[in-house]
Image (cartoon, one colour):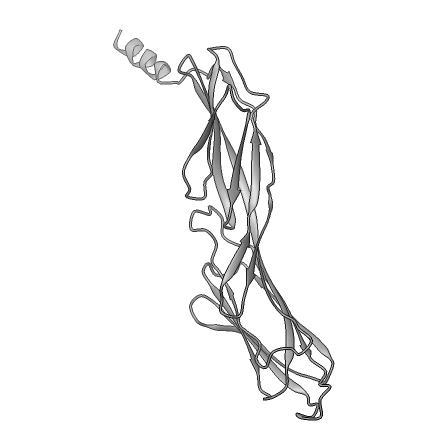
Length: 241
């Protein structure tokens, strides 16, 4: 009798399957969230909207009452009345790989959820382009991923183009420009550097890739060693997952 009781106790510990047959279609991910930087490290974010469609969800235990989402990026749970809408939308403003949960409840007290992986790369852009250029190119700060990301980045790709703006005035006279790129990791260690002399009216693109980059904020310092010689820059850094 004792062994039978223990055995039935083990079987009884298993949860019965939910009476809700959940089906969720996701649109908008994976994707890329773009951060447009200015010369003072201010940034604007082009957020990504992800839509979750519960149209295929059914329940044999009661009328569906609620559809809900735990976004996984540290923001609050959102929900909708199942009688009003079969979709939920969430705007993601940070990058990383997030473990989200989409679920449904019914009038019989039943609940079911589906685990969903949502991944966004982060792209950082710093553009300084004008007919006259700038005397000193700005540096690019590459922000860290969302702290709730369950994965770390696989790659950091940098492409930086500097153009020596053609001088149409007599003073100062046309001259070459010397540009130095320095890439620092989150610990402050110099990871890569390159110096290039760029002729009047010419452009040069420096590229660099890092596999499995350290988590945290990276800094790309761009220095101009020649005074009174203006440049344009178009710099992009892509953090991939």
